[in-house]
Amino acid sequence: MSGWSEGRLASRRDWAPGLSTLRVEAEIEEFAPGQFVNLSLPGAAEEDRRSYSIASAPGQPLEFLVTEVRDGKLTPKLLALAPGDPVLVERKPQGFFTLRWVPKARDLFMIATGTGLGPFLSILKSDEPWARFERVVLVHGVRDASQLAHRAELDALAGERAQLSLVRIVSREHAETPLRSGRVTTALDDGSLESAAGVALDPETSHVMLCGNPQMIEDMTVRLAARGMKKHRVRSPGHVTVEKYW
Image (cartoon, rainbow, N blue to C red):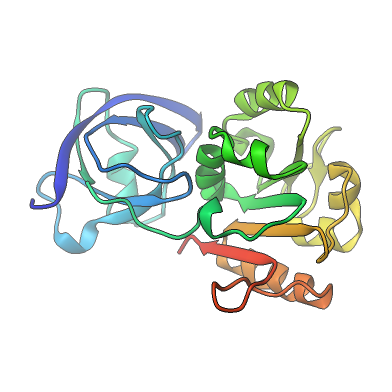
């Protein structure tokens, strides 16, 4: 396939049933943290290719955080792969969900649900957020604690970077401290998100990046707009940058 790199699955980390990080060896063009590429498999139809955010830092082996989509044409096959199996990776990365397009702010809030964590992992592994922002807050909402992928890795990063605050929210089970029960939206509504982060969301000082479930993004966008935070566009600077995941 023209424009595609023939790679292979190097290794995998299985977090929960139907949720894995796949490490792929493939040659692609240089990417910016937050961008995505299309993946496919040998023999798959053109319409079966899918976009996945790169979860690794530039210069490191490619990683993708993948969750199984029921009746999906590609993800069940990807998650059935074993190390050594072939994977096709489109060579040209895409997307504008990068810090290049985020305007100047004191605090950066990265709010993800599920595998929306992927691009934030790449961004956090780079140097840019630590050079640009006084505080970086990562909020990760999942159904249950087993789906908190890369938890130990992020805990270690927070130990190294005093600027980083981690807020983890589970929606379908009772959460023990430091986890919180509920949804990302309810955590914003009741103030627990900002309390856990140790910093307030403020249009004067904050920029928010939202990635994951489109309903979460829509609901959070409405709530943030009520606080005076509008969507960011190059020609109309704002406070909220979004990346929908389906």
